Structure formats: structure tokens, C-alpha cells
Image 1: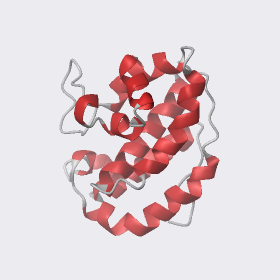
Image 2: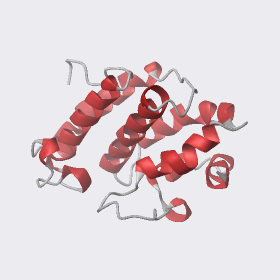
Image 3: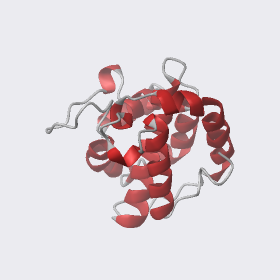
Amino acid sequence: MEIIAESLRNKELPNFLIGLGKYKRVPPLDYGNEPNFYAYWWRNEIEPFINSENREYFAANFPQALIELLNYSKDINLGIYTLFSHLVQYYYSLNINKRITLELDLKPIIPLIKETLKIHKKNLLSDKRWAGEDKNSNNNQMGIWGVIIVAANDIVKFGGPNILGDEI
């Protein structure tokens, strides 16, 4: 949990969420060519942190970190991919396995997510990294865009908002 606290103190929560630099952790099992093992982070670091006395500190910073991921200039597709990966984990932890009880109002950032997706859809369609590889049948050979569609549907299935709607 100290690693999250450090990222918050240093105003580097987006770097933690992506797994950059000192925030990169290798889990005890192979997670393929993913940039980070998001489920592992949630189970072993984020959920315990949220369930500690630090929950309000996390709540105050998590939405802004998600917005910063949408503006990750070094690799916008990585930022978007990371954002959706964490939203899936958040709503799964909140509503399905009920390991956290911290309900965040993320509705104010939904329009920004939609606008970012509209702008970058073409790039996401052609980006074949990570789960966007053509060999992954669940993305319908639509690159990271296919992964985003699956993730957005999972978010709704897990009790979260309909981020994609009919507009994208």
C-alpha cells in the first residue's frame, strides 16, 4: 500500500496506474504482453488501500488521475487502455466481488472520455498492441478499439455507466 501512498504524495497517481518507472511491479505470474497486470494491482494494492484509512485520499485523487490518463501525451492509446482497465477493475471490485465500498461519482468525466474516444478512435482501431492483437478473438480484430468496446460492456455489466452510448 505504501507504493500508492507514495504516488499520491508525489502527484504521480497516473504513473502508478500505468505502471511506469518505480511503479512498475512484476506480479508472481505471467500476464502476457500487457503493459501492467491491472487485476493484480487491484487485488493486492488498490483494494487494501481503499479499504484503509486512506480511502478519502484515494477518492479525491482517482478521478483526476483518470483525466490525466486521457491526456497522456507519451502514448494516448496506453492512457486510454489503462483508464478502461482500471474502470473495469473498479466496478468489478465495487459491485461484483464487493471487496470495496468506495462509491465514486465518475459521471462528470464521462463526456471527456467520450470526446477523447471520438478523437482517437481511428488510432485505437489500428493499434494492435496488448489485448488488441488480432489473435485475441474478443476484440473482433479491431485493435485496442475492440478491447475498449469489450471493457465498456463489462463496465455496464458490472454496474457502471454506459460510457460508449450510441454516440461513438
